Structure formats: C-alpha cells, structure tokens
Image 1 (spheres, rainbow, N blue to C red):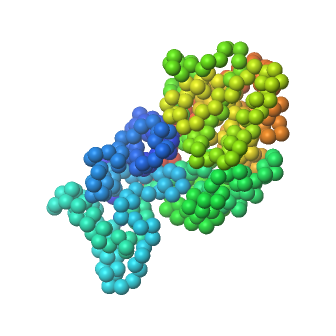
Image 2: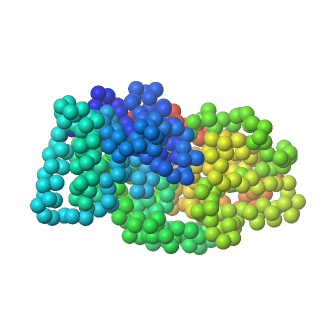
Image 3: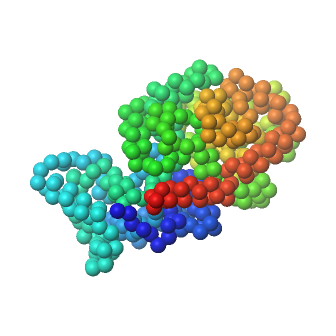
Length: 444
C-alpha cells in the first residue's frame, strides 16, 4: 500500500549535499513543491552548508523519540526522499547496528511479525488513538528492545515498503566504484589517482569491499541516482544512474561576478598581478607529505614559484577550510581558477569559478567525457574549462597570464555556461519533471 501526502509534489532532502539541495529546494518551492532540507550531520562539513529547515542536533530533536516522531510524520508529509553522499542513504540511526545480529528464534519471529504489521499500517491510524507523540515514544522503546533484530537500514526499507520514491546524489570517486577499477582509468602522467590519495589505505573510507557493499545497497533502494563526471563503472554502470549536472547547482546571485568584496577580504595584490586561485576543502585530512593531494596542490605550489622566478607577476591564492559563504570573496578577486590535473573532472571549486565568470583549468579525462556524451552531449560540447595535464599546465598558465583578453573571453563563456547548466533555477525546472515522473510512476 502507499500513503498519500496532502501534497503529491513533496520532497524531503535528508542530509546535506554541500549547498546543492538547499538551493534546489528553495527554487522548487517557487514551482509549487513542498520542499524541505533536513540536516542529520554533525560534521566538519557544516561550513559548506548554506541552510536547513530542520536540524536533528537542535534542542527540539534532542531525544531519540523526537527524531523518530519527525521521521514518522515525514512518512505522511513527503512522497520523495532525496539523499546524498556515500553511506548517506540513512534517516534514523539511533537504533541501527548496521546489521541484524539476531536472525532466528521465537523473539525474532515475534518482532518480525510486529514490525511487518506496523509497516502495513498508516501511522495516522495508530496515532489517531494515542497521538503521534505517544506513538513515537512507544515505538522508540520497542525499537530499542528489539534493535538486535532490526534489518540494516530499516528506516530506508520502510520507505520502500510504503512505495516512497528514493533519489540519491552521488559524491566522490569511491561512490559505488572500487579502488581497483578506479585505478584502471588512464591518467596523463601514468600515475593512478588512487596512488596519491590519502584514503587508499583507509578501508573504513575506501576499499573494494566497502565500495561494492555500498554500491549494491544504494542500487537496490534508490529509484533514481544523480551522478556527474563520467565515472561509469561497477555499480555506476546502471540504468538507475543518470548524468545530471544541474543537480550540482549554484545560486547565480550569490556567486555574482560583481559581488562587493568586504574590506577585510581584500587581497593585498595590485590589479596588474595575476592571481591564481586554488583551494582544497578539508585540506588537513586530504594531504600527505609534500602537499600531495588529488587536487594537485603539490604541482601548483612549486609551479607558481617557478613562474615568479621567471619574471611573471603572479601569486597563488591558496585557501583551505574557509566557509564557502566567505571564500567566494577570494574567488571573485582571482584571475584564474585551477583544479585537479589527474583526477579527470572538476567539482565545486570550478563550478563556483565558472559562475563567477573566471577562466578555469582542470584535466578533463577523454573517456569520461565520452561517457557523459551519451546522455548530455550538448553539455560536453559546451564545457569552457581549459583542460591541462601536469606536463602542459605551465604552458597553459603562461598563455592565460600573458593574454588578459583571452581570460576575459573564457570568463564570459564560463558565466554563460554556468547559468545554462548549473543555476538553481534551471535545476528546479529539470527536477520538477524528474520528480513528477517518479511520483506519476508510483500513482499509475
């Protein structure tokens, strides 16, 4: 059976995805959607978030039954649940042991019977007699008593049982793809990207077994998956996975090329100095000896010093762990934005640079572009990012440094491209159709 919310055009974003889901939800509201953002994360990534409607770490959700109450209400209030990030298809973790520890015996069979019966009931019918608060408190006690019997991600299985639609935003090279597979992608310097990644020997973050287990689960529960960049292998080689660049959206007014820069954020360089912007989020957890990062920091730092020694008036503007609401002021003052030279595609730094009208440099892996071309050929044909490798980056930068008119022209195309493909308004128009198609499938 399927519950019917008061508003069929209803979606809850569970967990943050940088700021993408926040801006998308704001624009969807303008199109008649009940679209809310729930923050379930207590992490260092909070500085990359731009807003939320609900936060599980605020006072009103202090007790586990209060979070459970929100979850139960959400079953009635929303038709679509959109999650993000590896291991991020989760909602209520207070009772989840990551796996069912007891799978047989009378108590287990009794619990399964009760649990299955509850799954078949509309929560409104239960709470009608004792209220949703009492229902949540009693159910919380029941779940704690039987937590050893709970199936993995029972909260997500309940969404599936009730025919709710589940959408998922992928994030990162290890999302459904093994280290072994990813290492087989070609690189311009013939050094596998995994070899310079600090997470290669952290199986709790990335390993073949870990990545495949996650990929299998997410493909079993998600009805629609958003990816971006062409890494279509292992569990990403699936009809459930779609290239959706507009999901990774940006507010064009927030990242305005003409935004005023506060005095405290002014860079101490003259207009004649070519300022090259490079950034790494969570830098200290992603760097190894010699400033080695998959963002190519170890290449850019000595290269800029070499260019300065050769007489070029340039400065490297390097930032890490600055909240994204503030870092845009430094991006806006840059002349060139540089990113990864071996990974194969670009992320938030470049998208923000594009929206700010900056020429951006990054390595674009040919195989990934061809994978993307199958779904979004126009996007691939229009990418204004200048592709470079460790062997060509010096030549590329000198060309841009010496040709300010070229920088301006590429910057103009960058802004136009970002407005067309990455603005939050365009994203809402695209997802209005995607989400509507999903709900129509349920109701057919």
